[in-house]
Image (cartoon, rainbow, N blue to C red; front, side):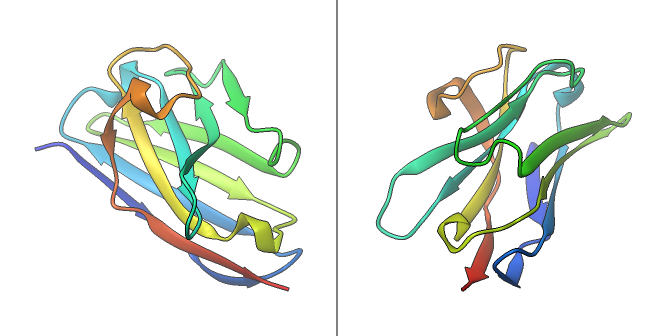
Length: 126
């Protein structure tokens, strides 16, 4: 069955770094766009970053541009999606979700993604 499993979240001080990982299996995710979204307490789900199947096309939210980097490893049976987060700020605190599309269309809209992970908590202390 389709599984997206995030890991790498945790508690970090402002200015620190974290690397999130997502292992996606159960279908040919290597052909499709994938992305990261986040949801802070009391707020809606927010776009963070997305990448095409090859990694050749990426897009970032303005709030994370220059600090976060999305990348992927299209292994044979499992696709690994990463989010390197540097210079973290308290406002980056949220649950981070990995998402996969059924197309290679790089989109910032959550509705364009069909598969979601369970989320991993990132907390940045000031």
